[in-house]
Image (cartoon, rainbow, N blue to C red):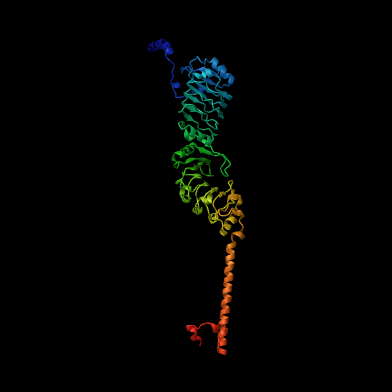
Length: 475
C-alpha cells in the first residue's frame, strides 16, 4: 500500500522537476572546459550542440573549417543565441582564422579550443569582444599572428600550454595571467623580451615552463633547455645592476653534465667612472667601460671578475696592464681592448704565459691602437712580441711611437739602439788608452830609475821636474 502511495507521489511531482532550472555547476569554472563525453554523439549529423546542463554554453567536436561553420548553424549557436561559453574540441585546421564567425565570438566570455591539430592562429578578433578567458592549449600551434589577440581588451586569462610556439603573441590588456607551459620550442631570448616589455604579465605553471637556448656559444652547437626560473632570474639582473650600468643576459649556455644557466653582459660605458665597477653581477662574462676616466684596472683581481672573458676599456686613462698579472682574466680572456689609453710601456711579460693558439671558436684578440708608446731600444721587445702575435692584434698598424711617428712593428733596431752602442764603444776606447798610458808610465819610471842608478843622473824630462818631498826615498 505504501509502495503505491510513493509511486503516485513520484508521478505527480515529476512535472515539477522538469520545470527546475538546469544545473550550472559544471559551467561555473573560471574558464569553460568540457570533457569528451559532452560532445555530440557519433551518430549526430551536427557537430555542435548546446549543453542542457549549462545555460548559455555549447560544445563543438571533431570539426574542420566547413563542419564548424555548419555545426554552429545547426546547433543554434548564433550571434543572437545567447551563447557565452564555447568549447571546440579536436579541431583540424591548417590555419584557424579567428575572423571566422566573428559575430558569434563577439558575445563569448569564455572561448576554449583544445586537443586539436591547428598550425597557426590568424586573423583578428572583432573589436570590443568580451572574451575574458581564451584557452588554446594542446593544439600543436606553431605561431599566432601578432595582431590576432590585439582587440581582446577584457582578456584576463590566456592558456597557450602544450603547443609548439617559438614566441609569445602580443596581448593588449595590461594584466594577463598566462600559461605557456610545455611549449617545447620557445626561444629564451624571445621570452626575455616579453619579460622586459610586459612586466605586469603573471606567469603560471612556471615549473613546467622551459625554453630553448641560442646556438652561438663557443663550441656548443646544439640547442639546450633552460627552465623558466633561470630566465626570470636573468630578468631580475637589472634591478641589482651596478649604479648607472646596464646588465643583461648575454647568452644561455650549458656545460656537459651541468644544468643550463645564463651569462651576463655589463655595460658601463660613458658614465664618467674613475675606477672599475665592483662587484660585478654573478656570471658576468662581458664588461664594457669604454669612454670613462678610469686610470687603473687593479679591480680586475676582485673575485667578481673571475668569469670575465670580454673586457672593453677603450678611451680611458689606463697607463699599465701590470695589474692583470696573476688574474683569472688573463688566463681565460677572449678579448682585451685598451685602445686610446695612456699606455707608454706595454709589459709584455704579463702575457708570456697566455696560450693564444688554443682550440676554440673564439680567437683571442688584444686591441692596443692609439696609445702613447714611448719608444727606445727597450721597445724592440714589444716589436718582437707584436710580430709574433699579429693575427691576435687586429689594430697593430695603429700602435705607434709617441716620440717618433713610426709604427712599433716597423722600428729599426740599428737606429733605436745606435746611441747606446756608440757610447759603449767609446768606453772601450778610453779604457784601452788608459791601459796603454799606464804601461808607458811604468816603463818610463823604470827606465829613469835604471839610468839614475847606473849613470848617476836623471834623463829628460825627469831632471827638469821640481823636487818633491818624497824624492829622498829614491836617493
